[in-house]
Image (cartoon, rainbow, N blue to C red; front, side):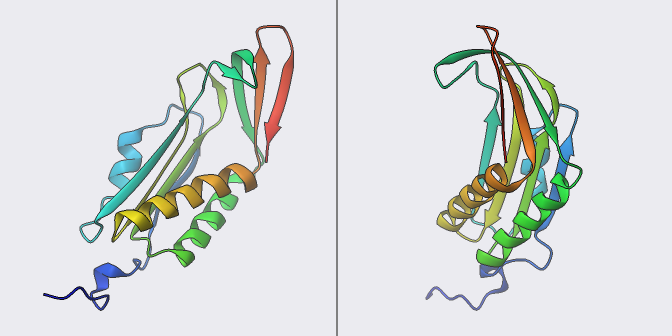
Length: 152
């Protein structure tokens, strides 16, 4: 049987943005993964960003995220842009704010598409654009007593 793009499962879904959120509580990979389950998807790509113990050669002791009140709306705008450019069947993205510890989940995003290559590309675009465009700021405190703000 020849491959065809005529099947509805080969296209993006009607309402693929399933979950968008800014959270003050710990994030769940399982919640995000469940949000993007889709029977017509052959590929699901998931990215988990964690708090690491160093940055730019310095030891990180503490880290906190804060955001502008428009951050969640900006996340949705970016999600809708990704949906417009890729055949996304389901998409989810959550970001943590507040004080986090080393190893905590800071961001979890996932995208399901008909094929794996599309899922990888869409997921990478989603996390890259979220990191560059959403007004979320990271406040790092280093072991040497210095501090740094980083963000979109």
